[in-house]
Image 1 (tube, rainbow, N blue to C red):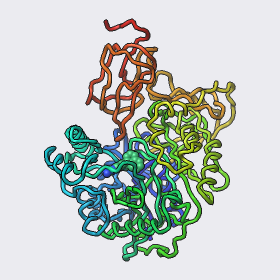
Image 2 (cartoon, helix red, strand yellow; image 1 turned 90 degrees about the vertical axis):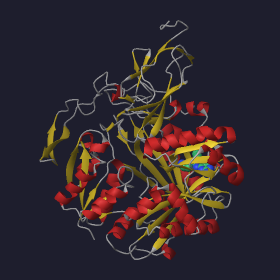
Image 3 (cartoon, rainbow, N blue to C red; image 1 turned 120 degrees about the vertical axis):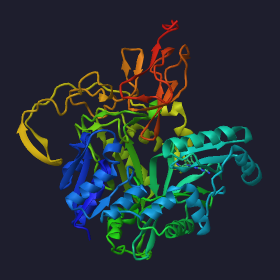
Image 4 (cartoon, rainbow, N blue to C red; image 1 turned 135 degrees about the horizontal axis):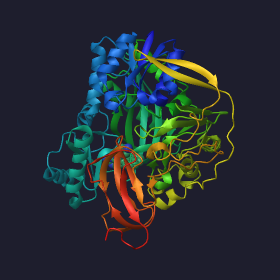
Amino acid sequence: MFKKVLIANRGEIALRVIRACEELSIATVAVYADQDRDAIFVRRAEEAYSLGGGPPSENYLNIEKIVSIAKRAGAEGIHPGYGFLAENAAFAAACEEAGIVFIGPPPSAIEAMGSKTRARELMKQAGVPIVPGTTEPVETVEEAIRIAEEELGFPVAVKAAGGGGGKGFRVALNKEELPAAFEGASREGQKFFSDPTVYLERYLPNPRHVEVQVLADRHGNYVHLGERDCSIQRRHQKLIEESPAPEWIVTPELREKIGQIGVEAAKAVNYVGAGTVEGLLQGEEYFFLEMNTRVQVEHCVTEMTTGIDIVKEGIRAAAGEPLSFRQEDVVLRGHAIECRINAEDAARNFTPTPGKITTYREPTGPGVRVDSGVGAGDEISPNYDPMVAKLIVWDRDRAQATARMLRALKEYEIGGLTTLIPFHEKILQTKEWAAGETCRNLIEDKEWLASTAKPSEQPAGGEEREVVERTYTVEVSGRRFDVKVYGEPTGAVLAAPANGAAAGGAAPAARPRRSQRQGGGAARQVGSDTITSPLQGNMWKVLVKEGDTVEAGQLICIIEAMKMENEITAHKSGVVVELPVKEGQQIAAGDPIATIKAGSENGAG
Ligand code: MV4
């Protein structure tokens, strides 16, 4: 087994890996970007090394820096978590070249699954059912029309070969829509994956997203841990995941079939470690979609129902040890649900709501697990994924697990930010959720989403004065050390950020009462007319023109950041008088993006 492992990630997943290492008596090394200097995962690791500032490309995505720190620290393995370098074959290869074990599959498996057309071809050869469609790139719109008309029928899905997770995915209902879908998917593929190649699939009308957790070691053992149903998603971002799927959807026989498909897919690429085979379930038919060659955000629900620690097993496999159990030892018990607690406002088109967490208290009690990496005083940065935490519950069946989740959501206190907690509370009480529906109708319904908004409360007055322990961070030769100081609070830790910083959030200085979840919010206003960007990103689409009359809540533009599309809506009704940012331009958090003058007077005219 490894003696020391470097974790090339941040946030909750870095902490999750550290916990697994501690249980395996492995020393941990964190690496961190400047803005994470005081993060929990950095403090918790035995050693921590600075990766410097700047954008992720200069720190969490910098292969050379990370490998050289691993060598300097004497780490024998690197765990990539999810996101960042987790599915980067060049990184896995660079680790191997440096004599460090990449805790994940071999580079060849990452590469094979990275190209969706190559993966589809490999799966077809291995006898794994794929969604009907092409396994070769489709070169031209004319060819796409011919294949759609003669082989697949409409509607068709056009998908980017370099894509995954829904990026570069367009639907054409008929021949007329195909050129735009083709161009759109290709453009998005080029933009996000530097690959304009697209392929076609038959579009399934209302499938479920069902995936299977697999584990493999270096001794030829392959097992599956049952399925996860992740059908509740928005714009291909999963919001709620559960394991198993509702019992009236996946029977034991179907589970066996899906599990076997997962194992066959993993075998076809000589997989090692923890991986997920994603697929679409339409009735009793299951089709391979793609494989995620890493540990996933939602692995926890499977851990709750199987009792198997997926992260530890992945580390064991990478170290050359056999898996600690066999397929026949896997017993599924009860039901687990995960809600992603994002700093987003569902009532405002899921706009990110970065800012400072003023108060923070996690739910506990029977059957509750919280995987998070934050606490009071921490900043949710507009530069990273908006996921604050994952709330996972287990109970003996789906209905009881739902009741337990509702109880835990109510216990969860996150002050200073708007989060998805009210959204989850609302959706878990619908008849659609109870019936195990995919809830796509609700998630797309602006009025229903607006109804999830919590009325805001006044902040409580009176700040408590007390002696506090404060930890200062010292960096010596790029390595992080902590110094503890006890004294009067200076107001710097829990106080609101300096006014005017657009990304700073509207956190009150005083400790707010429980359930005060406003603040953050959508794009903030400068004066009362101008909307400023809540995040750093790229102007993806501008949907109005200067001079247009808009309603409060109407879509103004879409900003692309962290591979997510963020909708910016009008903060009030009026006339658009200024739109300073053009499509394709870079935007910093706080930049003005639109000015709307109330009433019918047109300030621009
Ligand atoms: C599809 C599809 C229908 N037909 N592919 C791909 C990525 C994943 N996040 C959702 N994806 C879909 N791929 C074909 N050929 C429909 C979806 C889909 C979906 C599937 C299950 C549950 C919810 C969904 C929401 C949006 C899109």
